[in-house]
Image (cartoon, rainbow over all chains, first blue to last red):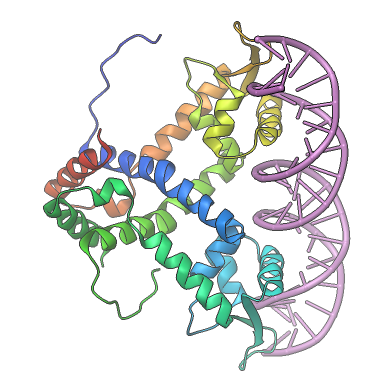
Length: 146
Length: 146
DNA sequence: TATTGTTATACTCTATAACTATA
DNA sequence: TATAGTTATAGAGTATAACAATA
């Protein structure tokens, strides 16, 4: 058993960030993984679907930048999504090297479902008092500039 | 960058949760990946180091539960951490099937450094007004029961 | 019989390097 | 020459199934 020392005082913003990380690790990550299992898609595939704009195809290079991985990985990820009929590659009008990525009708449906599921706030936040929920939103708006 | 759609009105807690997810995706994830690259460890290895208690070994089965992966994966992850001298397997006194996982001295040092780096709040939160920083902490304390 | 950790296998993700077809 | 995407390769993570040692 460790020696019972008093926890050192932390700046409010440091503690707030730690609590957000707890939320990520204990709530967001398990939900994220379970959602992938349920829909039978891997995490990078899930990120790809969520990132694609339903109304506007994006070049594969943009997806690589967004996944923060090498462009060579995108080939395989897109191959598998395409094999499942969720996305398709299209020619880019302005540059014949570029391939544009678009959601299929089924891909759009899956994406919408994923979005809806991830948008559900965790019980921890939903249980807050109404004033806290509004204050939390307002502070995060100011933080992120939205 | 978030997707700019014309947004229907959302409940405050739904919007707050969306903003937290933005923070995760745009801030936490890139930092997490960069930290792994800098220390030359993979994400599961990083999670393992952060999860291990410096003062108390844990059985491998607990780690598997915590990583939310099959026990067979833990063997390889621990093999690589052990090969780098960051963790070691020890016998469990009460059950000879169980192997306890302990940080080495170097593993403790690496873990402490990782903890310190991840504890730094992102610029978005650090830039908040002092009253907002305190309010954010207080609300998150109430949400998570800390 | 059940459980802990390992091994074997197959698939996916990952980076690096080399290639192609464009620009 | 430079860039977008692909291929080849090797290392790592993942689940499933089978196994040894132990309970």
